[in-house]
Image 1 (cartoon, rainbow, N blue to C red):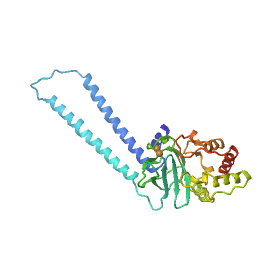
Image 2: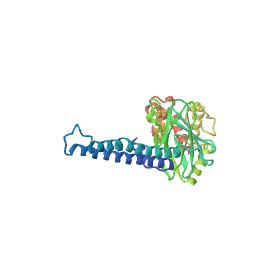
Image 3: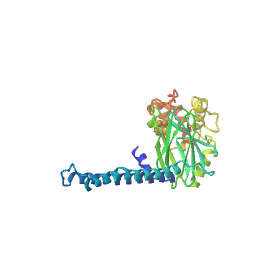
Image 4: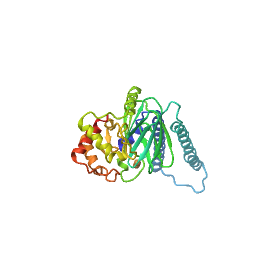
Amino acid sequence: MLAIVAGALDPQGPVAESMATLWWLMLALGLVVFVVVIVVLLLGLFRRRIPPDPRSDGPASSRLGRMIVVGGVVMPVVVVSAVFAATVVAMRDVARDAPPDALIVEVVGHQWWWEIRYPDEGVITANEIHIPVGRPVAFSLTSADVIHSFWAPALGGKMDLLPDGVNTLVLEADVPGVHRTECAEFCGLHHALMELTVVAEPADQFAAWVAGQSAPAVAPTSGVTQRGQQLLVDGECAKCHTVRGTAAEGADGPDLTHLASRSEIGAGAAENTSDDLREWITDPHRFKNDVEMPATELSDADVQAIVAYLESLE
Ligand code: CUA
């Protein structure tokens, strides 16, 4: 989590840049005020004491009055006004409207995974967002159940995903990079197991990714993958999962059409390896004990066939 938060001070896009600049300005002003207060405090503690003259209304008390006006009124007004002006500038950068050429990415929060849709490209995936470097991205955020929160600190943010509305957040990546992040709003038992990966990549790599993801699933070629597909399509899996190009059209769980292209499963709860896939299908509650997906009653050989099929879904 620390590494994720630290990303806010390693900005990789204009919105994060603006927020980091504001943060450094506030730190610098806070440090200056802190040092001045400590110096005045030390001077007061260690200077030679002169017994006060109760009849005097002379230079000493008028100097004290000036110090109170400067230190107690003028300085706070200057500092707070500077922070206010800088905040207004940063807010304008953070809450900008989506330009016409922005890539639209719809993100739907679920307990506990992320549904990702690219409506103009015909891409549906989960838990992993790819964006092209140098092009504004309009994230259209909503939730299927409770409030979640989207936050990719190195790119800027954060913004809530609400069940009864759509929030829009416009971000842009200046450089390629892989940003691992987490849901930023407590959303139930597995809030901490709701990871999201944002991959910023050059435009040609992004175009290649879109071309792959928008295609239907590849047809199984071997006997075991054909059997895996049949088990998936005819069995319980298809009630919740979609594999585009097959009769599996369930909508409650993540789209599996290109599962093998993703780095993790279960929103970061497990690796996308044969062993973890097999264990996840056998009993996902070992990884996330309150997840909606039930344990399977399939034989080991059938689970193995489904794993082989899923691993072919590049
Ligand atoms: Cu979703 Cu916390």
